[in-house]
Length: 255
Image (cartoon, rainbow, N blue to C red; front, side, top):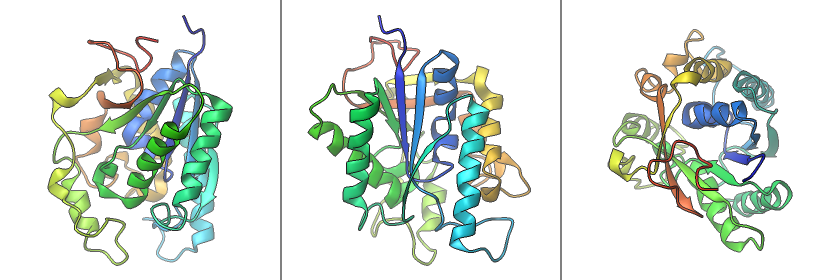
């Protein structure tokens, strides 16, 4: 029996952890697991929904602070920032993403790694690059392979977000991405994690990312209506590593 599990979360931007797997992070932290969040960028290519004019450096500083506050709300250790340029993870920074994940696998030796999936939740190229780089890093690793979990979402949930982002200048969505392919059916999910006990912590984590909210309302994140569907249960698929036993209730079951 493992006395202390290690969980590594790899994200592209501050706030990815909050909507996707804040419940899982809080759950693992409450069980005494060693939880580490590694963020590849500072999210400086986005916007502050409260401020009309802000520099990329100012926004980066705000979003780093918000991610620290989010992790604090979840009861886990402060995050690690890699500082790669936002919006470049699928292009000029791709090799560095894989290298940085490899370094984490070697130094932290996680039992479980979690990221967004190959569809990037809503097709974001940086999200997809992290998932692909994680796959490549685990494949190339000479160390014990972790169980790799991907966040999963109900089919169509993020389609409106994807379709909206497709039509903005310098869209983060890859060309010809099929928005109708997003998500999966409930029966395709390997772990449906009950996070109802951590609902308030997840809302607090989302609230920490105030620059991405309207009027500080966590339910305004991305588009209204999404957050409420993500507060009682989180879905995960096993992308690599040992499968979860049938009826699993924890990401560490079977270890």
